Image (cartoon, rainbow, N blue to C red):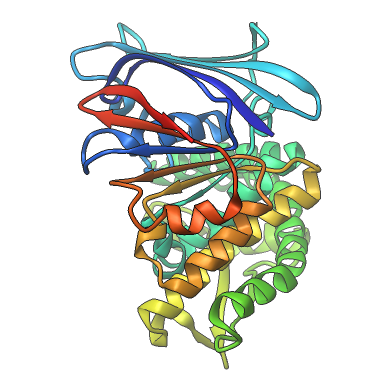
Length: 367
């Protein structure tokens, strides 16, 4: 998979920019706060229509403007495609996306066209952020590789939202909850099955990556902890929790409460591991994501590496070089190339370097 062109209008710090990429390794360099990460954010938006920094669409619009527009040309096993994303907050908020100049109505028909894996310093949130962050990691991975899973997840979340609205209305009757309970039960069980299967497939990849990254020092397990076992008990559990749910104003039972355990001897890594161990686990999870998507979809995802390499010790930097060797294309952000070229240079490939400063992008060098 390759990103050939990227066009930006009114996105973050950029009024307008158009970039053409001819190399496999592309660097965006500049001081902190100049907009390097904004470029990776724009690229990653084509993957799942959401900011990896968890910003709303409104927050992605350039200051004093009322819309943003993104356009890219990608090349994958299906050939060359054009992807477009547009958002306006003028009068009413509206977001549109296109594939080959044709409007796409459903998110599930857009997500998965362009596959990326992003490494950022905030990846530690997967380890430290608790069940919600780990579920988000798993849900994203399954969504970009399985449209049926994405549809189930969207419908589950829609039903959950409606059920929670009813719960806030203290005068709602049990009968009103039945259709939403049915959706949560059926969709939830399918989600559970695919999450469990995914974790089982991920275990071996994760363990091998962690072993290589830590030199065999770290051995942690990963497993899925479900709270509801089958559709019958799912519906029963929702009904049994009705009074509690009504009292607290939200649904306390379901796949949105399940957990992904990472740790050892039944102790979660969050409670005992060092920062170095947590960093290794986060990198191993992202690397596992890369190889999983590659295996399931037959496409090699694009790597987006946001100012991560400089933080790593020699062992972890060498590990990244091995990963980059197996990638289709990689985009990096960094303040400068000092020290990094020593590692990337060993790949003996042409690189493209763009200087980023105050919303302007200049092709700096190509070597």
